[in-house]
Image (tube, rainbow, N blue to C red; front, side, top):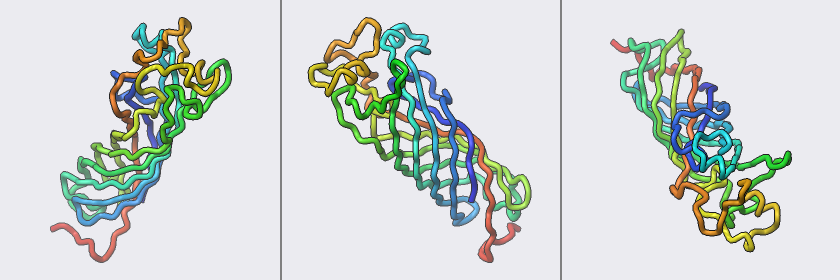
Length: 234
């Protein structure tokens, strides 16, 4: 069992080019069952924060669009890990190993923005005329490195991306909606936040890619409980 601490980031309509940009913290806890020195299966809970703002973009068109968001992520996951070297802390001859992970996750999100000094839950205002869900299934895929620092204690470093089944982590996906179909004046203002109101209905608002992704990266510390089934490597 162990704990994780580090950062989180995302790739999507408001960050299309920087896959390693950390935009907030990431914290979590996990338990794993080691079938042997190579394969384990675990469950984890992770909290993260991701954000982005067009005002900080180097692209002039993005700055004109002037959208922004921030959301907390609440993730529950089941992941399998494969060690490239046999690794049983305090028992195997290998003190370290690289590894890969693959799994499935369920994530809750709630994109918000601050507009004229007021924070809004963007999903409530249907800024693209779409009532999307605030939960998604995601597929974690990542790499890491484990090192047995002392006894049964292991220090790890990892980077794990999550491919989601939503394009609304940032509340941005497709095209500007027909403003007459939006619920109220606040929805209209949040949908098109450009100073020149460039949001002509039907024109591109997002990058039109079907899915957003997010990631967690950082360090973990874990303790391995040794049972009678474990054995010393000869």
